[in-house]
Length: 430
Image 1 (cartoon, rainbow, N blue to C red):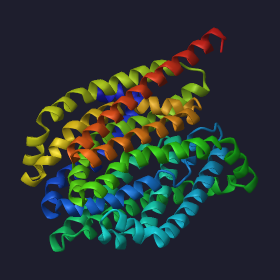
Image 2 (image 1 turned 90 degrees about the vertical axis):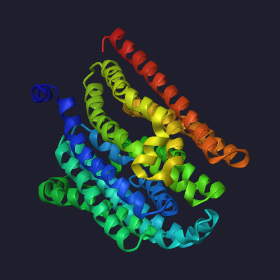
Image 3 (image 1 turned 180 degrees about the vertical axis):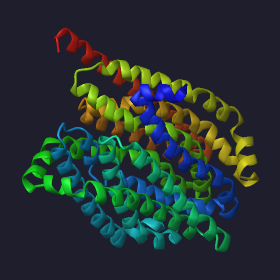
């Protein structure tokens, strides 16, 4: 019965395909978490989190957000040139990351109170390049609706990561194993997509690319680097700022406790939320281009995510501490306390995925950027206030409440804007 339903609804089917790959990927990481938490101590996870947070922050703008525009053109020729522009941006960002590590690596490590972080920073350019190429190809395959290919690459990423982290943890349990495993996972996932792309799409894409057309699409979609890239950078920075500020105020051990609890909570959210977001982008873009009812699919997707996430969030909010102590070991008991507050923010963030996509489809990147600036300021202030006057737990609680409130505002704002645009289209006879 389920199989039949999935065949009828391409949206549900595509989400299910993407989720299958993410489910395997996240399932492996969840299964390995109790092993890794006993091989590596919280301080090692803290160093690793500082490294991975920098990768995430820079990777999100590695393409200058042109990858999001790959799905938008009606013609593949234009999409091919957007892909080319996106790849050029990845190369430039990688070069900048090398310069940043060379000039600021030592100063940053010292400021975080973690001088042992410095040697691992040289792996940043490799991770950023691999992540940027993956993102570009990921959205090319989204355009082509080859979601199975993306799903398999995500699954192989976790295989590559854990295939290094666990053996190295058994032999020499330092941050090195966590960092190298993370880098290898990124390399495996991008090579998987690149190998298939070179075989199937290299020639038609190559024939479509020209300097003139690349300049044309770069200009046509200039709002992505102009507004979406700063917005994404600020959003990523605001989500990862706890790692840096907690390290500054409380040390790497607290960062480790926070990061592993966030990682475990975020896995199921990524499993469903990112898959929905990616497929919803294609569906919403199609609906927008063909004057279909975007408001209806926005409400349906948002309500569906709220129903899915409600009960698991309540369970974590009530039994977070004993759950983490039992699963990861007694030294991770406090991580459960952090999780009880974080689940509030993560739940609302999980529900806002369709709203976030719709705002980009309708071209409201500028307003989204302003929103992210305010969110970043609010989140930073909560951690700073907590670090100066309170405990790590209070800092995380304040941070989580601020995130939940802002995400709720984003959902309501998107619904309001899309409803008005839909109403105006109907009245205008569009």
